[in-house]
Length: 417
Image (cartoon, rainbow, N blue to C red; front, side, top):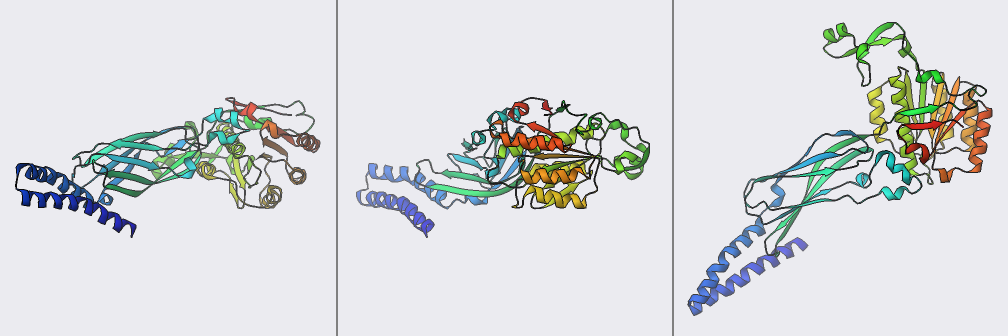
């Protein structure tokens, strides 16, 4: 109804002055009245054309330079706009409608300077351009999105506004143009320093970062990103017309499982969780480069286990967010019952409580080595946390404390305590 009233008002604003000028020219029949009538006539015709011109019939598409990147990187985008009729337009305001997931920035390791104040990284992204298309039936608008945060982002809408040169008639239409953008967690080198008590207390297995694969090839499998060039099985690649790599005896069992705590907590620091995801990614990649067979287990309202699927791991870590209401300690205990115990368990969490300490004590009885990576702002590490860490040391569990002091460095230097 409001749109109908607006249409009638705009139509009246064109017809009324045109009628007045016409009546004046008919009755006065002088040069001035005729001049005013014929001078206003092209303007009135343009206004009428603008009034009934349909912006919603345009063809709008988005062209991305790439749709898979790492957190902190930028992409270039072109908005291509085509219209069937070259109706003259004095201006067009074109706006990208960003989703809520993009209303923050990722400055890679520099963002962890704000680990105690993550709200500093929230921004209001806008991308507005004004173009003057005139009679053009096709035009492009380039722009960049910088410092993209981790996640799977859906670019869904483009808003276009236009109107007449006098500002009496305004047109607006929101085009639903959907494009997916996958931003993987940033991967950084991670350096694990040996703690002082490694020999006495069953520490993190140092062989995992220095393991060399000397096993005999026992078969072949499909290539996954990160496989060494020397592993390629050229005969199988030629026969199956896809890249195949050699499968070694070592790959038939998982040496290390990296476990990520992604359970939701109302008091959690979301930037600390991003750091936990980044540490998990870096650990998985480091182990993979060292030829160690590492699996990933994420625990939230659902439990996801990836024994060797490297590509699936990256996609999963790109979209994971804290959810679920059950405590991580309980879910970890349930998950461990169904998982074949590997030699090493590396657990990445933002919260060390009494329940988790008890669960780790029970797990240590069935696993050769357990290491806990506690990712937390230094201001939120209290005396009770150090007391719990001491108890874990007594159980033979190594704890690695990761705060902004380690996260702002590249590579991440993680010291044992």
